[in-house]
Amino acid sequence: MNRPLLTYLAILIAGVSILVLEVARSGVTFTDRFVASTPVTTLTRDGAEGPNVVIAHGFAGSRAMMQGYGLTLAQAGYRVHMFDFEGHGAHPVPMSGDVTRIEGTTRLLMNQTRAVIGDVADGTPVALLGHSMATDVLIRVALEEQTGPLVLLSAFSQAVTADRPQDMVLISGQWEPHLREFGVNALQMVNPDAQEGETVEQGDVIRSAIIAPWTEHVSILQSRAGRLAALNWLNRAYDRDTLVSAPPTGWAFLALMASITVLASVLARFVVPDTPLPPSHQPGVVRYIGTLLVPAILTPIIALPLDFGVLPVLVADYLAIHLGVFGLLSLAMQRWLWGRFPLGWTGVEIFTLALVALLAWGIGVFGFALDRYGANFFPIAERLPIIAALVIGAIPFMVADAQLVWKASLWRRIAARAALLVSLGIAVALDLEGLFFLLIIAPVIVLFFFVHGAMGRAFGKRAGPLLAGIGLGIILAWALGVSFPMFAATGGGT
Image (cartoon, one colour):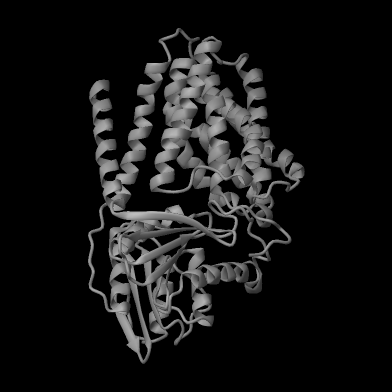
């Protein structure tokens, strides 16, 4: 496909995607407020008098990630209240307590949920909708409080019994076999012969387990089938018959993000003049692999003793150190085995302009779309020091990475990124208890290379790998700093 046609197609797809996403929001008012220190966003249509629904997100999520379900319910006349758990999204207070005990962190999250429920309660039992981690919290709240129906996405909890909670639907992604099994088990507590897709009733107990087709743990948050199933369950419980459409916001969101990624190359060509750069300097296969293996193996050994646990974000300290050590070792190996760095240079003015353009597009434009339609991306003040600390490690790593992959073949680019994942895997194996959450970070890093890596590659082709490395280092630190939960090992509370 020729370049102008691809550009026009990307612009067209972006426009259609924005239209679909805005139609889903049309007529719904977003009202932000705080319940104590908890950020809450209320979604309502004008004159809405439907029951209240409190929506809670999963681990490393935020209220913004739950808006697909929130908007569907709000369009149907429900009054929807989405909130950020402590340590997540825009909540300024870190999570705290003992995560291994129900009376620890879970109890604090339950108390926080109760506070939100109490703030919106008007005499009609409040419905609860939650994803992943939140499902256990909501189930335990429902066991101790008089609540309305429960809608549980990707649910798991050891607190479910044959008669409590009484009214709940469990919606699991098609590619979540263990959570689907949990849903069936919850049905069979009521009726041993129950199967997935059925609704079972016994006395005051009514339950159903539903599959959201073609989804897994994250994409279920945009499932059209899941959203409509949630609406139908609440309509049944409250004897309502309001039906709404469920626009394909998941596909629209992915298409918009892809379009913004593609259009980064257009911006790069517009901002950066066609400046001669040094030719690619790629070593032989043996030297290239050696450049990858030495940092991958040595970094965990060097970095683990340096993890002092200062930052209030799970594994952020170690990750910053790991990235920095990996990057410095990689640069040293490049200097030793390659003989020089393929930095390239475009002059201060062009370099600065290109860096500002890359950051504006990768953080401003992409970040605005992500923050509005998918997940929080703009940090609160409490997260700025975390981002600053991550920058110190992320820039050396991304500069080294940018030089490794500059004008390299596809297999070399894949191998360079795989080396980091292997290195993080070695670190987890050496300290599973302390660094387990690095396993959750891995998909974030992979997605970063697919999206922002493509943006950096477009700018790097025009302005050299040093520009791409510095820009992507800042963006990587930003993305990690805003997405992972803040956690205080001691103290805290709701």
